[in-house]
Image (cartoon, rainbow, N blue to C red; front, side, top):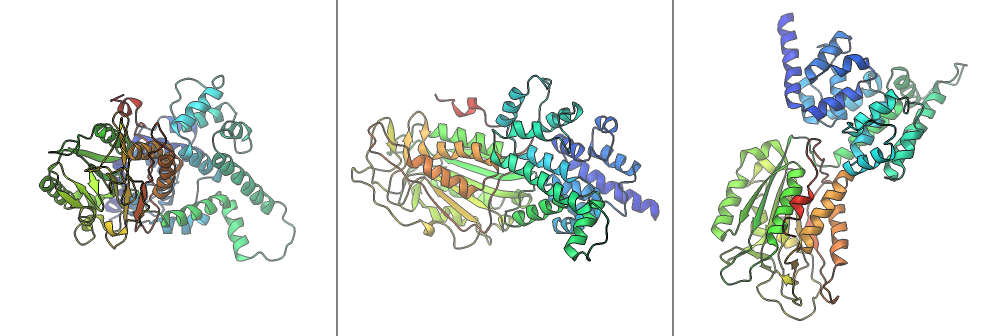
Amino acid sequence: MEDDNNIDFHQKLLSIDEKLELEDLESLKFLCSDLITPKNIEGIKSAHQLFQKFMDEDLLNKEDCFLVAELLFLIKQHYLLQNIGYTKEKVVKELSTKGKISSYRVMLYNLSEEVTKDDFEYIKFLMHKDIPKPLTSFLSLLRHMEKQELLSENNLEMLVKVCQPLSSNLTKRINQYKNEKKESENLLEGHVPEPPLSKAQEEKKLSVASGTAESSQKAFAKESTEEAEQYMMGHRHRGHCIIFNNFQFLTMGFREGSCKDAGELRSVFEWLGFTVTIHDNTTKDEMERILTQCRTNPEHKDSDCFVCCVLTHGESGSVFSSDEKSIAIYDLTSYFMAHRCPGLMDKPKLFFLQACQGMDMQESVPLEADARNANISPPAPKKIPQRCIPKEADFLLGLATVDGCCAIRNKIKGSWYIQALCHQLKRLVPRQEDILTILTVVNDEVSQQADVEGKMKQMPQPAFTLRKRVIFPVPLDAPPPSKENCLTLE
């Protein structure tokens, strides 16, 4: 029976190992580098080898696997916690007494999660005399700084110096750690008789004495609270993104520049971990067939999110297929209501539409309006198109323009809205901004654009029934969208 239990325990660890990637392993090795000597860590090539090293050091056994749970929690692989009988809430509850990862190590790791590729290149430029060229990640840079004694728990000056020009959030995180560390040290100074400590003070003292600083507990608790307000993004497969790119019609104008938009959307959403499929010039029957196939896709069960982008001509409350048949926007979105698509229940369903919602706009070359016809009358503000999304939770509809107005598309550069959307996703997702914040910035960017005469303007408009924030994690193994993908038609 004992052997069976050991086999079962090792199988659970192997199952976790199979789902972790190389970048995850590097994160784990960095986080536990205070627990295992650097020499032993360097030779580890898999998570299972790391777990075996934990067992050799009496840090892990079948009765106590909290260290693995703590590490999985830190690198946000929460869906793997169930393999060893844990949940996020249970990890947070046990951190004060069982946590082994220092608040210093957690702070550095969290910094690495916020540092973008551009930030890293900037830091390497600043420190080019102190670091070797082969360093490929911010974590590897931090390890090198520690080896060169440029960084330690009590020596953060160099780190602050290089992070300060990049983001106030980075320096704020470092200063928060320093302040909480000082509080913890003050709490442990001296042992003269004192009044009885409150329960909160006892827990605080215990957390420091057991090797897990109180700042870690605060950070974890705060992160857990924030994550409770976010949609889960823990699956390896982010989800499916389908793009309807209708640019050729029977009698309507050819939508030159639409393929530029489609290519940019593919680049960005693949970067975010989605499986992207582009459908060019689809008839109404074909669009309905594709939507039906998509809503019944069993892969939704093991994904986090769904995205649908429609690039076409349109009018108020509807879009056109390539055979020029009108499809109500509500009909498009309602395919993915919970009773019709249970695999996406409680998951965010995001729709982005580049299509006119009316004819109130002037026309100018090389700018075009995505409408059947375009009037010269000035645009009139309309109400939010809430009627276009189902009256149930977890939907977001991003429209390129307000109801009644045209959406502008540059024949060469693509549409104002889609280009701004892709630009801000690339810029703000690494900063962990949520989708509504990003769409607000998109609104601002588009609203400031105008034609050469300064007469044509546009204002996008979102409608949503989201219950939580949508924050996309950038996969560690995904390269950023390349300029080559973005500028194929220039």
